[in-house]
Image 1 (cartoon, rainbow, N blue to C red):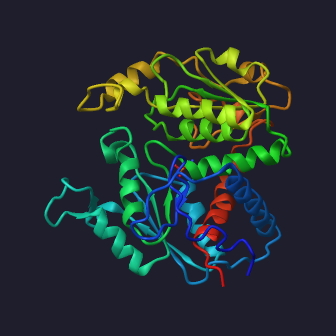
Image 2 (cartoon, rainbow, N blue to C red):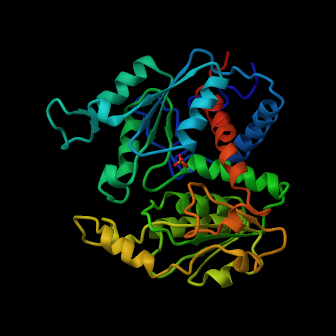
Length: 369
Ligand code: CP
């Protein structure tokens, strides 16, 4: 058995990026992911990717079951976890919340329609080896961080690892796969390189999870991070504070900009994508009791010029890479020319979802012999 299987077994990881948890019952939810842990995961992901490319089997989790609970649609996340579990000799089991008793927080019970998360988590813990959850947007009435709270509640009650497949604050598995893609394309020399996470217009409403996890992980990588967004598209204050702390700790820098073109100048990595303006959400920054989708669409439509096109890519360094978590809104967030062009690494990123998550599953689900 590979020596990384079970490497992180029993560790209780939950915040801030909330990649996964492997907690003993009732254990305090700790903030104990470190940059070194992430680097180890990336090295393991690269090893697993090399084996996959050479068609070398790696059945590291035989007979194990991953329960995947999706409150939202998915192409990459669902299929990368399913394919990963197939490679590992286990099974990824898809759960549609409308086909079970909907998991509920205390106070939100509806007789014979919902089931307390405390009960759902303990039931699944009796018959599987990890639980993975995706929840944001309409599933939580666009109430910022409610999806995150639901994942934390699952984590609190499950006796088996809990993996965040994207909530309304974090998308850590995406950030891990992106870190691997940056590491590969910049050949390990990413520290002090300029990384731009930028808003880009979309006619759809997307959560804040990707920009949040991306700026956190890029500052943890020691990159010089610029967060470019129009007024009204800010991230939560505590995220920005954490980015500044990471920049101080890991030797990079962090700044915000309201000018996409200026931000792109000399960039080595650009990651332009949409998210929802926060005034339209229910959040700690306003007194809303209902989200306002019309307002979100109106505010977004004021920034249709925030598109990643060839002219903006020409402002970057000549070897700059274009990133996007996908799905991308072509013609809105990005032109075909850029996303299909030589600088685009979006399909490597998508493929790395599987390898990075495989590294995570092997280390937190795998048991040491
Ligand atoms: N990037 C990402 O999470 O893709 P899906 O929504 O398709 O899972």
